Image 1 (cartoon, one colour):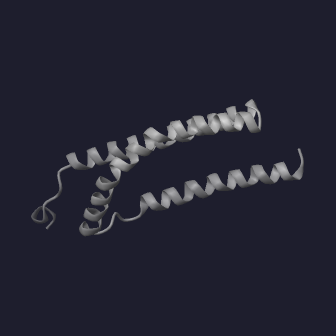
Image 2: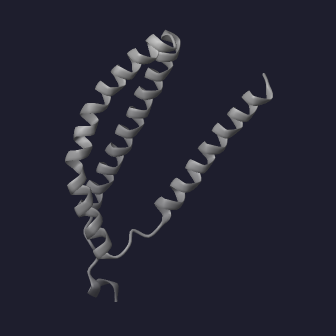
Image 3: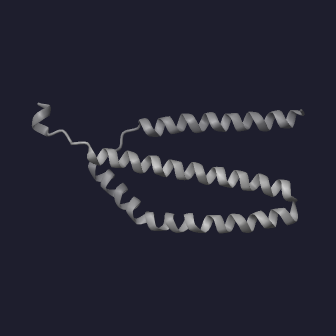
Length: 118
């Protein structure tokens, strides 16, 4: 392999390490005050329909791009794009499912009362 390929692989590995480190930092951070959580919930609720619409449109755009790539670059490159697009969509779907399950568990958990802490 050439030096350029090693550099590409090293950049990929570094991006994965960066992603893991920043994900852990974000998940370990404080959720914020009650007001901040209330605002975040309102934003999440407002963006849910937009996210659903994008989830429906993304495969259509992906198929169009697949055919354009197949025509311009060839079938192997188009198949590579399709594999990446499907895996990216699956990762996003899995992430949203996990977040939804975590929020459901948080709602079921009873909150400690102020008098019980003292």
